[in-house]
Length: 220
Image (cartoon, rainbow, N blue to C red; front, side):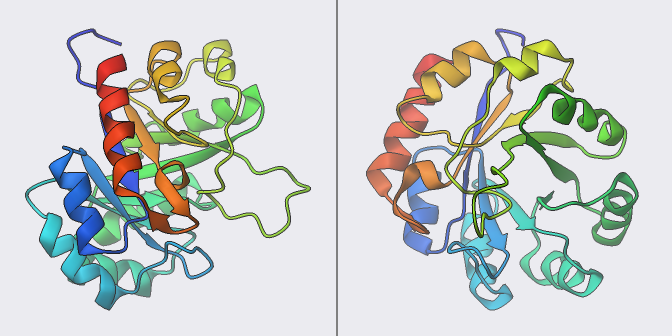
């Protein structure tokens, strides 16, 4: 990665104006709103609208969905008006193309990683997704695991064993204790955190957000 390119940070799973303000005050480049009912970070369209309005123009708004249908995607794009759609499910390259055509928004596609071959699947999306996000694939033995936000990481050396797309986003178990290493050991352009800045599932902690972003910037 070019030393002149600024590494960016995304705070995902925000649910309150207060935490949106914390992210903005600490110059988060992106905030994520989760539209997935099983998640403790889920927000409804009605809850998301004021959050997005509050952040618009101050940070980039990302709407995270998991195998969403056209009805939900249309409602999000028309009412919430995010800057990006993050597809965090099992969406195929064809489906990503359909989402892009429907919403007319840039797409972040999440790839779940456990082994090197998982990283290689990102190549299928390189000509359609705008940003590839690498997240940890939950163990098969983990009951009721979410598509993301489980607080587990993966072996970053897998990214060195393959050729991931340039300008990728790194997620999966990032927190205050490892974000410095994540910056220095990977070529990620973006870092995405959710559970790593929470005091309990779905409850963001202002001090953790501030310290995470400060540590990431200092390591950069």
